[in-house]
Length: 327
Image 1 (cartoon, rainbow, N blue to C red):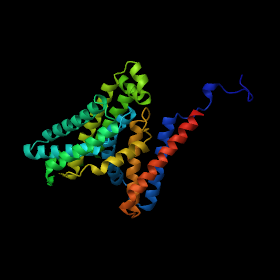
Image 2: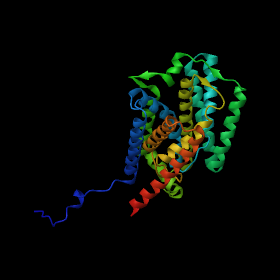
Image 3: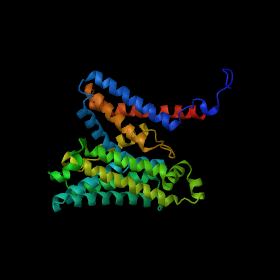
């Protein structure tokens, strides 16, 4: 018989949340707090249409950041995602206008994105160029090709069938949100339920140990860069369909917010930790912050400063949570 003086069994005691779960809970709490604040500032914030619009905006950021998340978890870095999106957008838009077939644009965007990602992987894993230098160089190469190809022109005016990718609805929910949820779910399953996904975490945490355990590090990391390129191509299709236009500067503003979404989501730049659920929450948080700044009539010139502060706070908070968990 158990008395009041008898300690409870270990299994019955309350256990602290794991660091990853706690980080997600913290981010969900932050989203709730921002939502309450915005609801108090604007009665129309909590409407279904507005919330769906916020998620639609966050979906594009998540698609760009999701591939980057996989690369960073595996111990790499991809600074070319914004330029890759630009090149995919321009080439796919031209293919659609010349052929009149959305399928041609889809094939071009995904093929171009995968090719840029494969080139990054080869430069990093075969030629042994550091990820920062390889992808930084690819940023300028892809951006330069896009500017040369477009020659100062803007491609616009696409068919309703193609525009459905960026502005259509299914079951009352914008299609980009469905794409975000499906790709996010596939990524979570890949990282948590497959052997390759577990190898990605080991590669990022300790590359030498991963190689000694028989993991083909070069091939795995090249695969991650190809996936990152594919996600940039997919994001390009949705972005062009939503804007109904493509021009050479379309992807430049997305690089730093994508990196911020990854960091705010809790993925470490040193690799080996993080996940796509956190990146999704990070994208939503950043989108909400931008909406809050616009609602408060804060000048757009202050938006990068606020984003930088948020990133620093998120990184410091994660470091504190991890130190507490180790104790």
